[in-house]
Image (cartoon, one colour):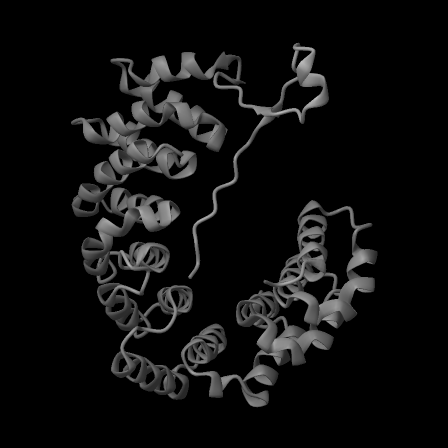
Length: 354
């Protein structure tokens, strides 16, 4: 089962003790970093200012600091809880989803503050709340019920998409099986009029994995097969196949894999080739027959396609050893996104699977 991973930003500190010279240097975190001419503590103080415009600006600055500003989580959460001006409150909702506090109590309080915002009369608030809850992942389990309702929000496809994103990240039971409420809501989402919502719902179902019940699994399979026949959107046609493979290994066949890999050579609609690479990576080692196609895609001029192809090869682990020469060559790329994807891919290919 997929576990949430949160990266910590640390600064190395030199020890002044004699004994420490023979010991590994431990990372130290700067709890009061400076940003835009003020320390984090100063920005936190302004978050509590009586002037809503000052509060909003301070919250935006803290949000830009991202995980380095975890210390600000309590102050940000208070801006969600209080009867606040719309602008600082909305920005606080955004900020807490970017900061993602490490402390369990702070996470619980932040999620508890966010959940009522799903019932806000303001669409922008509902949208940003869904996004932040999704960023919190499993910590947002208590929001599943309301998110399942929000995915039917008739006012905005963007809100429905954000709700689908959140459900795909938090939709598990305490025993780490997919929550049937999340599965049912996402299953309804793949019939949405918006292709963006359908794709997000499918990706959410892929993330959650097969239902515990064989009957529920069969119902999903039949729905996927129906969607495959009626949906004319090329992006959806890719992801519905991946979703079908996720719950039925028999669907991992040459016909489906070649169909997806065929889009690597196409750029109509724009971005479809990169989505195909991403889909093959989501399938993982069982899509190893498409490795030659992904190696060819590494030579493309499209940065997004190259980066996602490298990621997909990395997802296939040692099965993709034949891609190492092409990946090593790409380490010379001037594009940072490609270099990062390539470095990760090489590491994953060379790391034995447990």
